[in-house]
Length: 426
Image: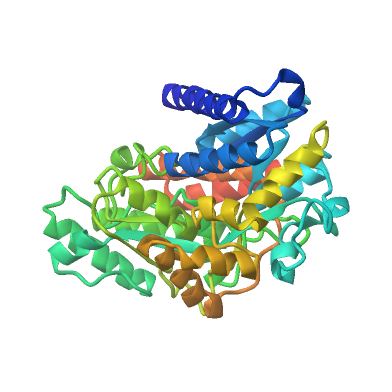
């Protein structure tokens, strides 16, 4: 928490300085809009966002943008508190899993009236637009597309003489991971423990023909599904393919503390847009590939907006907030500053312009999306209200199973029981 607070303070100061620099000697009356911008993510994302804010303020001296960022785990509780207090930021970086929940609470502003005016997203494909809609209304602006991605330390596999885990089955993946651990004398693990990672759990469920949630917002899995998931990772733990629970607990669910970044494990289960942030923090070249397959005959991957911009329903500066959002997804200069760190741009024109100037890391992400696209299934329904609490609950139960306080069977039973209770009162 201290790290996040310090970081937030520094970022706010940095944005303030950027704003002052951009405003220069302008008289106070020239500032006619002040937009509060809120996002989660790594330092790399913060740096890119700051540059986009600085350029936008330079071009629009009447607009001041105050930014605030937190790690994923702290971001959502704070946003929930602010929304409940009717004091949420104007421009909110939104995730697909939460957009329906916030829209149906009345916390987000429908954006349809801005389309074709200050919001120029007419060249976005239907999937990119539909994924940002709730009950037929547009509540988000797709910042970039992504998919699940296994990010791994290439050198760890190469030094161990073990093939890289490219498009392998789950059984083969754990076999390779255990071999990496053994080659590094048990002090460096072949993969992090992803039993608490909902994105990995969902991908594995989809391979089995299941889902986290049904179309009508019910739980899409049963006790056996959850128990089998915990059992698979318990077996990996026993085989030393992944670390013990006390080491895995050092991961605080962000790039900085992930065991890949800490030099404790060779693989991290994440999204393709996060590759850039991981590579910035890792000295060794990283690879990117699909999650392991084979839990069933169905595709686990799907394309989704990595994140979207949403506007707080009570914002008094909605129009300026929409214009800045549009700057980041449709203005080539703004989009280039963000690169593909938030995903591959949805606009074909912008995607082409951004891709032409990408470094090798950025091109890897674009190539990965091209590789995955023919293999994906349909995007699942937007998670229902309460889904955020269930995601946190998965992490808690996974840790209890990892520390041996719950059997895998009891963990599955408790997960389903608590999830159903959360959904029924949400």
